[in-house]
Amino acid sequence: MGPDQTRQAIAELLENAVDFSPEGGRISVAVAGFQEHGRPMVQITVRNEGPGIAAAEKTRVFDLFYTTRAEGTGLGLAVVARIAANHSGEAYEDGEPGKCARFVLEIPTRPDQGSGAIV
Image 1 (tube, rainbow, N blue to C red):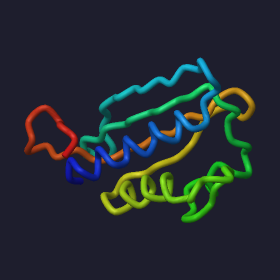
Image 2 (image 1 turned 135 degrees about the horizontal axis):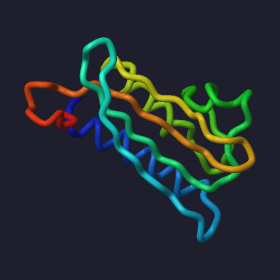
Image 3 (image 1 turned 180 degrees about the horizontal axis):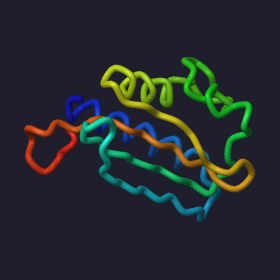
Image 4 (image 1 turned 90 degrees about the horizontal axis):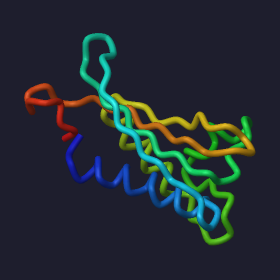
């Protein structure tokens, strides 16, 4: 995954968090490394204190052109999912409906970049 695509995916997750956060609500970002089948991975989590996502909508929010906002295009999270899938990664939502949304992007790192840098 190139750095431009990584930045784009993270920017989309942050924009989504801002759009759905209540005024004064907190947005948190966490980054963690892990191994999956011997492959170095990074997990980027963006959480907001918005209304959360109903269980039935958790996978649908990544569908192209699906949106719950009147002014939304339904492209942002679809782009995140596509970037993750194109690079053998995954994007999913595992927040608490009614309390928060928590989007997770898991992507492989390139071990030839030294400290597991996202590229």
